[in-house]
Length: 434
Image: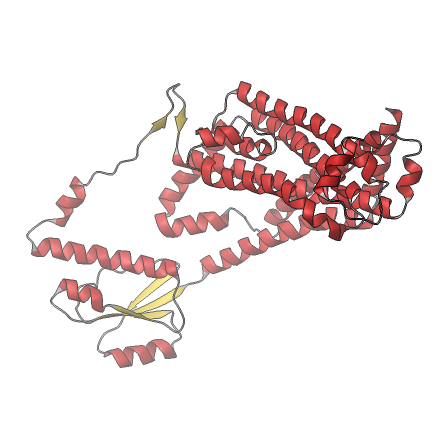
C-alpha cells in the first residue's frame, strides 16, 4: 500500500503542476464570472432603455388606457392620418407606432390593430400592448352587453393552492423549481466531471503506455495498485481544482457585484418583473429565500460528496481500462459508447422523469442502478428521499466500484503490455481469464 500512496502523490503532483491545469484552474472562474457579469450588465442596460411608442387612436376608445412607465413612454398622436404618423414616428426614431383604426365592431377592430416599427419588436412589448388592448376591449364588450365590468372583476376569484405533504411539510411551485434546479445542477456537474477527468486518466495511461514508461513501473508495482494510484491521484487533482473554482467564483462574484454594481440576480428579476410586476416579484423573491432556508443543506452536501466521489471512481476505473487496452486516443472510440450511454441515459431520465414524478417507479429504479444512480439520485434527493434509500444507493455505487476495479485490473494488467493491435471485445473477455 506504500506504493499506492507514492503513485497517488506522483499522479496528483504531475496534474497540479501541469501548466494547462494551472491556467485553466484560474482562467475558468474568470471566464465564467465574466460571462455572467456581462449578461447581467447587458440586461441591466437593456432594462434601463426607455422605449417611446406613438399611439394613433382613430377610434378614441383607448385614449386613457395607456399609462407611461419609466421604461415605456406612450405619446398620443392627434390630427394626423396613418401615413403622416408613420413618417413622424420614423423621423423621430421612436420604438414604434400603434395604430388603432375607427371601427364600431369591436371584434373586427381587434383584428385591425397594427403595430409599426423599424425592426421586429420585443416579445415582452407586444405582450404588454396586447394585454392593455384586450382588457379595454373586454370592458367595452361587457358594457355594450349591459354588464358592469367592475362587478365581474369583483366577483372573480383567484386560486392559489397551498401545497403540503401528508406529514405536514409545506411545499410550493417555487420550492419544486428550486429543488429541481439544485438536483439538475448537481447531476450535470457530476456528468461533466466524469467526462473531463475520466478522459484525463485515460490519456495519462495511453501516454505512459506509448512511451514504454509503464513497463518500468509495473516491474516493481502491481498493475492494480498502479491503476488505483492513477485514479486516486487524478481524483484528488480534480477535487482540488473544483474547490479552487468554488472559492474563486465566490470571491470574483463579490468583487464584480461591489465594484461594478452588477447583480447577477437582476437578470431573472427584471424578466419576471416584465410579466408579473414589481409587487409579485418581491413576493416571489421572499418565497424563494424561504424555500432556500427550508432545504436540508447538510443532507444535500453530504450525499452530493458521496455520490460525487463514488460515481467518479466507478467511471474512472473504466476509463483507465480503456486507456490500457488501446495504443492511441483515436482507438478509444469503439469502447467509449458503453461508458457514455449510461451517463447520457441518466441525464435524460433525470431531465424528463424526475421533473414529472421524482418518486415514480422509473425514477426509483434508475436511482438504484449504480451506473445511473449518481446522477438520478442527486436529482431526486431535494424532493425528499428517505435516508435509507440514499444509503442503499450510495452503498451500491461503492460496491460496484470495487467490482469494477477487479474487472478493470484484469484487463489493465494485460492491456498495458499489449502493443500494435486494436483489441476487440472478444479479446478483452479473454484477458479476464488470464
